[in-house]
Length: 319
Image (tube, rainbow, N blue to C red):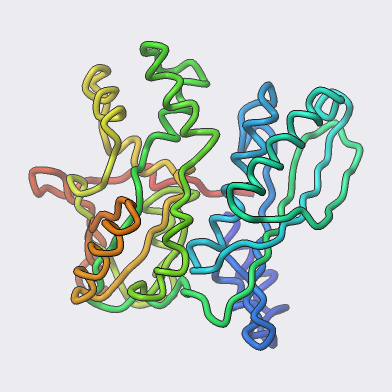
């Protein structure tokens, strides 16, 4: 079973009398009366980050990926708790100094504060981060509407290119390699867009597991489908250069995840305010498709208007 089947079969019943759990079908816990929003994420060596040679970069990656769960809900993160399991190989004085310095930088950048956590001696390295914010409302996951336009912030695919370079499966010149490595470890979050999302988004999710995987989670309990246009999916100039020089396919990069951009849907008449918001904040927001009825099967269309068969939609934890 994959993670969502386990949640449905074993844990959903435990939360059915608690509306704030959102039926365990969203990225956060939301207690409206207390204006409390909470997200929990776990990161494991070898799965969520390939090694711990650069602890100062790994810790930035996991902090940003954690608070992005709140940001895509329209909630500014305020506090975080961090728990770690490992041994002196991973938590030596030099590495702890680097981790502490990076956490201080992230706190200053995003206005967040460390409030607690736990440490456990183990031969396996992992981190769990709990992120907390406060809001009277959030943008829910399963609230897309028929005919909604599908939007995404920023660029997709840079992080996956960075992963392939770190794995030494792609080689290019040093300047380009460094660019992609930075995007892998320090994803760009659309932080300034957080509160503005309420002006136009009907539903939202952050892209962690992959564009298609997360889009299907966005509408997973609704009788809806989607149409995506590959030509409209935004990628950076550097990724365009890499794809061209290595004769690689765009589709193989934009659907792999770890982008932490915001994927959201909005009514078609909201396009002007979305464009205006993007320009005023200096944030890239691209319309990439449309929400359709289930009569129309979900489709991914290439530059020539032909349907693309997607073998790998993104990442799933299979047990």
